[in-house]
Image (tube, rainbow, N blue to C red; front, side):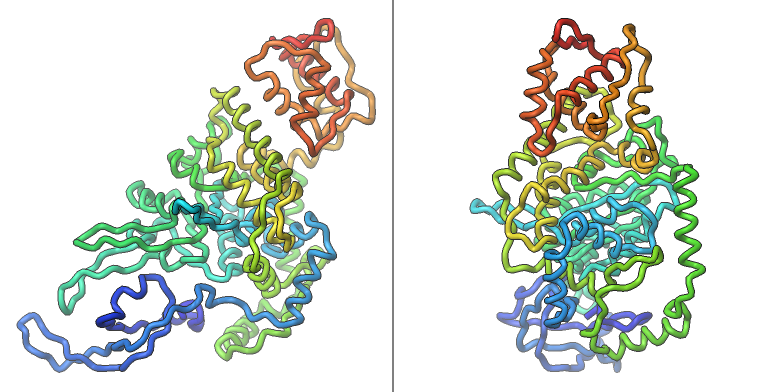
Length: 546
């Protein structure tokens, strides 16, 4: 198989001739086992004269389909026991943190991107409805940001952890190279179909670096693949539909070189909305100038370079490559390995086994009614806030594909827990990740938000002073972390309304969110804060929007 070729060598190929009933039993990109007769056939020149050059072909006698997961890791009883022990021993949040840290231990920070890529490798559930409608289960991801923020390194980590992945670049690939091409046979002049990268990566992952360097004509070719997951060809008398059921992980730079905060997300990326909506997750990764963050990154990088690790020597690397050629038994793979920070993370090989085992369980997680209500409420709130702030172009469009993305991420988190049902805890994790995607600028300021020592004092200082100089709420029971959620609930409640009573506002906020409990002090603190910003006016217990 191509992925089993020794390092540094190109995979060999041979022409196979299919005759009679064996014609069209397989498509380009399929993995097959062929039994046949190896023959030498003379080559005819242009003058119809037989030359002394012979080409070798394989005349097939039987063709059998192989499993798509030929790169599946070998699982022993000890591995299965250790894999099943992890979800029982760790909480879902701790387990996802452990998998995220083990996914890319050499990259400092970007925890949410690591978690999102782990869920991408697990994937959702592919469904074919009774009327024939196909709903994809693969998750697509796009990372856009400044140079030197480890976007390409994330793609390398995906290539190293995924069971089967194909790598390409935007400048070095064309539309037909990604999908399929129609070529001419040199011997008989007939047309033949050759599969592209996405067709060859069926049931795998396609990593596209420098996605912004692709031409518009070539970029349009992958629209069908990213949603319908098929490649339809109608050229030169050939009409065929090939399967391309793969996840797409792409990395791109902003159009201005660096991310411009004064422009919106779509203006920085310079991609059409039709293509952006096909990416389930869009992460804006910025190179922030912050002293504490810079010290953490420099400490992490210096620790990697100064650490005495013999596995980084050239001699050991050559020994590892030689051991790969000899196909050494890997049943004794350690479960944990040491981290640069002094802790323990999962080894790369064990992480591959865990993700493969969790993804290929014989059952598919089923949505519970509570998770359905939770996801529907979050999606409705985002749609309302987007409609209320229609002038704001700083966020990406929110469509029905956003709702399907939340379902896929919830399903992937349920697979990670080895659960047969999708509960609220799965929907909450999917909502947290999608909140960073929907509010694209919020992801850039996440690290700065963690550096605030007194967020309550910061909220009190925002906006001009009010007329009555209402002091900040001194009550320590007020949880400031609820303020962003309360503000979104307030926008949803006040949609197409000018005024509301305090009691009704409190009841509406309680009914909108079943996961977070709000107290009357929280609502009153929010009202005082919005008064201070001159957004509302409170009179006789009634809130009026200014």
